[in-house]
Image (tube, rainbow, N blue to C red):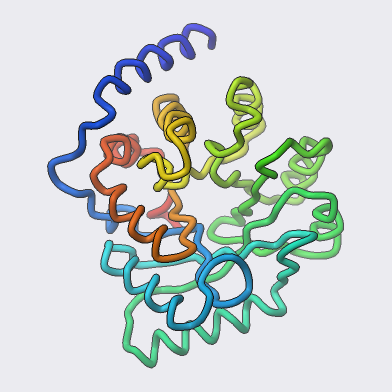
Length: 258
């Protein structure tokens, strides 16, 4: 493994020399078919503010080639106390508006669960919202790791969930502890990269981490994490990123299978 990481590091240094290079032809997202991380139900988290914004974002994603969208509202202990009781009615409202406007796209809902102090109560109180093959989308705090994340993930896997970690490239407290990511992969955790990370949208450091995961063949899902029109424009720009093409050509992405 140290030799592999050294090779990945050297490859990353080489690629950074040409980081300004772009593809001559934009990637068509229809090859992915499905986006499995987005915030499209209006008014329930930090995503689409209202129905008009929701439909505008969905139209933009259809134009990019997506045929299926899985919206994943935040479920958190402190800020976004969502549940199936408000997510599913919200999904139905968006579906009705899509039908009214004759927009052809499959829309489903799961959730993005934050690993926080209230998470244990959620998974012990009943089934969690999943997509595809019982895939469960989770995220960590951006500030520090939760002290019992290992036990939580073990419990989830025992319950039969296929755990997907959202945007691992954004947890800066692990950037110099790559072994943490290796441990997650050894535990069978799947990784979902935010496509706009490849443009440097969050930071150049996040971009480099996303590229490092792609070089290491560690990415299983590609997600838009769509929130607003700024994200949509960044997603459009992602189509010219060489690492997007490398990720798609890796043959490891599961998007088209869900």
